Image 1 (cartoon, rainbow, N blue to C red):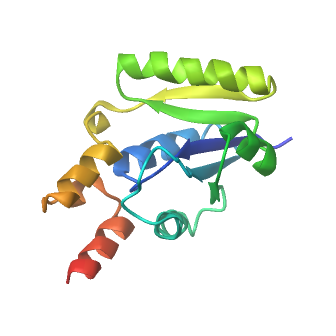
Image 2: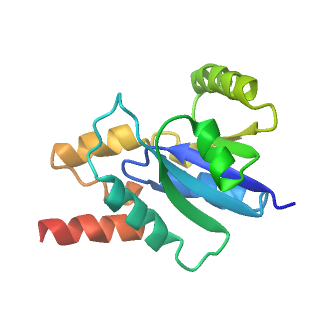
Length: 159
């Protein structure tokens, strides 16, 4: 049986912090599916199509990584893609309490799906999509926090 993991999030935009978690999870799983979730409580800066394109472009040469857009429960997405694991990145200690509550709820919904927490490397602690969006909205240079594909795409839109 293949060990498939879902890495859910809004990825608005995908950052180098996300890439770090994905990269480190590849040695743990046979396949990692990046799940770009629709969140009714968030108004995204970038379209689903753009976020999916960036993700697919970044990993176009890596058959171990795929990406999907999903709506609704993360557990349902896991079931649809055959994932028995959910990957969550932890930046700060207080992230763990929130993420554990979600993991407990997910386990209650499907006890066959396990959540795996990966702590981010210290250099990525401050790299959050929310902060990157704030920098971009206010005309700052956030390129150092973005994968090359995303940075080039954004530069080409302003050029």
